[in-house]
Length: 112
Length: 116
Image (tube, rainbow over all chains, first blue to last red; front, top):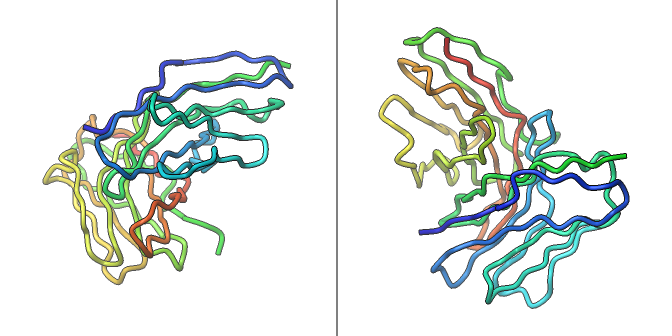
């Protein structure tokens, strides 16, 4: 069965430092996609970055990059130069038959 | 288009009452999804539409839940005989879904349901 595991319930990071949020996944599908979403306290789910299982290069979107290690089944999110506005819940998700399977999330708090 | 919209944003109801939520997806998006999110958890998939066809339903979607997308545009999610365990955020998302490839799903602001 498909599963997403996020082992960090919460993280505190100093402003301007880089932060890595962990995500491991389990699937038997040969083709899949991995997503990261941000959910601020307002509740809206905001798409950050996507990685396809056959993509040769790691995805990047501005300050966000995805460290994709297929053999280890990990898809960690790296945020460079963290900002106070990055404080939020972060969810890793994987598509399975067009639905998204979600991890439990990591609460990231950026300290000034 | 300003994105996915959901109505109402908040709903408080008494146990046993019926409630209906509405979702308006991004206009050119063929796929529409409903998720449920309880406090401190990631969302859980409920159901998915490709145009007007409901193609996938989670086992979480008991017979008290029904979803429709009558003209392939907006969708409604109805919960009959609400229970306190139905209290959650109900999220709607849409995606282009023109081919069998992964697309990011764009989420609405959610409807927070509280059953008293």
